[in-house]
Length: 397
View (tube, helix red, strand yellow):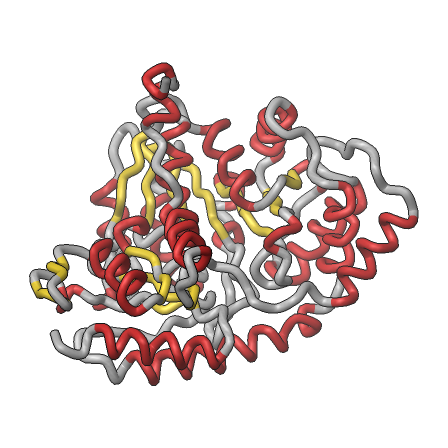
């Protein structure tokens, strides 16, 4: 009966990260020992002070529907966080709390993009951006970069990609999947191009802002000429190890925030009440309270780069944020590995899953067909064993 499904759902791809996780789970269920380095999920527990706030909320009988755009005191905490961490001034009427940053992004795209509008995706980009744009009947247009430019685009690339149909640009720093971080100067250079096109909006996904290793995080909306045109997206999943709590939010011009609230009111309504109370505790706390996780990620980054650098055919750079490495593995294209012809990154990722029993994600899904994404949000033991398995699986190339 699938022929009766809508064109909308038929045109929508399955998330590559979730698809790989599902394949890995299937192999595990059949008794295969799989090391999962595919999902972007911290392997830490949610900090106790946040869990305690949730317990308190349960005991205080928070169990009713919440305001569509979030509790007033949570929105105030988000405003304070934006001012403290990002030097951004937002009022509560510019804030919308959603069920994860993914919904925040989807809301913004739905309220801004008309059928046929072009949306520029600065590649590599998170896998869901393209699908979200497609669902809004927009045209996802990639602006590609590669390892030679540290996975960053230039102002001229941006300008050459703009057309009369361009409505939105989606940027992401620290970047998933590359871990690259745009500096203040690099963002200002991009803004100089966008200043020429006042009808183009910018969605800045900053979910990894606290997971960086030396380059200070810079919010695109801090550029005065961009503030009224930028939707700043953030959430609690990555830095606070709260992936399952599903809390995301935006800071945006009030007219966009109002439209996102209207959209959300017809889709999910307000976000989970207990998670919102926990989010207040997380955002009000000093950033130093989660620094131990960042330091551990930094240590793992050093470990995995050292180990992968020993593998012939893996071309690496040093990511400055997030918890991924994004090696160029095009050396293997056209070669056979144990009788398997490797034509592209997808072939290589499947080969590693089936032969090394290590789950990664193809770079094709991120707009970077020469790469694979490897998450180091895993224990040192799993990182070491995973790289040993990869080396063994490709040693006869």
